[in-house]
Length: 453
Image 1 (cartoon, rainbow, N blue to C red):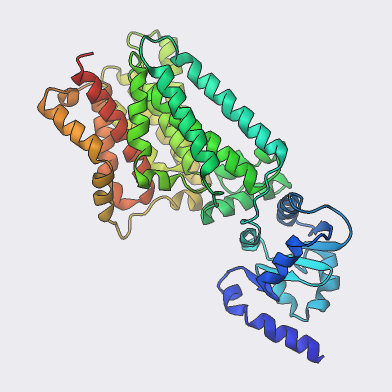
Image 2 (image 1 turned 180 degrees about the vertical axis):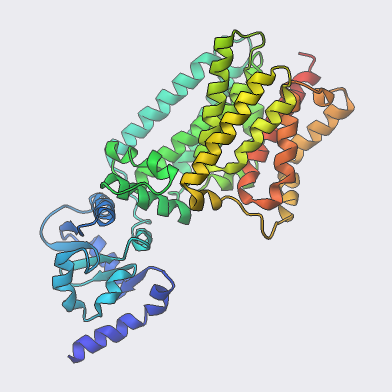
């Protein structure tokens, strides 16, 4: 009895963290570290709910990168309500059963409890996040995927009579060096919840947000560990950097290196993609839309116009999943390309309808991106300072006959987009990388006009 009381008192020392939905360790974090560093084997046993099975899949996959599976230590995931073995062994902790519903890692001599409920167990990821031991297959897959994407997106840039191919090779090299010299990336808190939801979906549960719907099939192909998410993130960064060359004017793809440089040189932009989150997916969708607009053809047949509208609408609605402010694009498009009212109306209506449907299905998720309260004007200062090279070129272009005064076309489209995103910067931190990409693309257009090409 005295031993049980002492154990309970020790655990209460961690109660403030638990009450605030923070991860707690018992008896301490060092005990869990000792378990991870020991030679003991392990067996993971999950609770009987989809979210517990999904999270147990993560725990098992993560432990398998550093330990062998076996019978030395039981790792029980869930709580006393859904994990029968945890309920039978819980008495050994000397704690009230209600503590099993809080996010905690409890280490005994031959049992480890990973506890929580559906609303908070994902916080136990922080206990494993510093482990970094990517499997060999993951490394090989990353290298092959990186190489394949580089070839697919780089081949069309060859033989264009400029330096696009060489600049693209330099861009690929820079991204690869960045990836192998960067420390492991952490998941943002919001993406961590999405990660948990995707595992719940993987185990047969429902899908709570659109990103989870995109992510859980990924876990059918690979294990749900941070190492694989890191590798996937760097592949997405490569795709984003590569799209810079397709946003550039069609005849002068080498200006894509200017777009890449002006965008990625900004510290705040790099910071926006320095964590594993849905941001990079949204930016890729945004860049694809800009690339589609930059490669619009005039005088198309009705079938080609329908394809054009369909592709623009598809990627716009998809990008809206990540950031509702992408709906600014159809507005800028209609203003800059007024020559085809039916095409413009179709693009605007389809994009708006798709966004409304998404918001109706996932209102709490999308509302995370809409911050109309407490605007922060300081973001203007950050944007001006870090975008100063591009801004100076634009000012020079305005004075020396650049195409900033045109009323129709790609330059007015990018100018309108840049102005709208810049004006709205105080409303949301999610707008900064979009504004920077728009500004860099606009700069490349102005440089192209100034060179007389």
